[in-house]
Length: 196
Image (cartoon, rainbow, N blue to C red; front, side, top):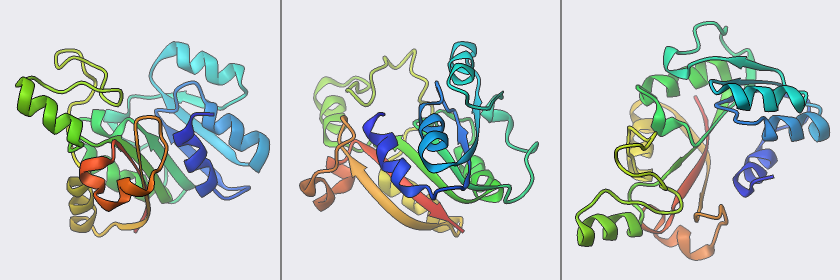
């Protein structure tokens, strides 16, 4: 399992109900179902990833997350997970509210556009940054809302969202002691656990 998914895995209680938004090939839900007796549902838009979910025995629904989660009732999941998709949404601030309407808690991950390499790249090259965490050119990137850890934490504060846990990692999804000294400059990817 990917290193970021291992961190998320540890935050999810056995026998809970989990919704994985933008679930990809269903790797996280598959592991949670096998080892933690989790009842899971994935939402994905790409057909090949939906097929991979089904092959793993993961329940999945084809859905464009930009259209919201109105088809789900309040608090129908214990945890809602969204990995590396938050910054790709048309209205991430509204989705944040939806995550915590549908679930008792949410886990969100996204790349930090305030990382020192991003700042250096833009400052010295004068071009939109690329890195391991941000591998796309400006014209074909799925990332449409660039934010830093500070931006996200201000958004949570403004929306009365409690940050239960935060892990800041490098591009290989490893946490290092020095990253936590200056997370907004040294952290490449954030993993947040949230509740109302």
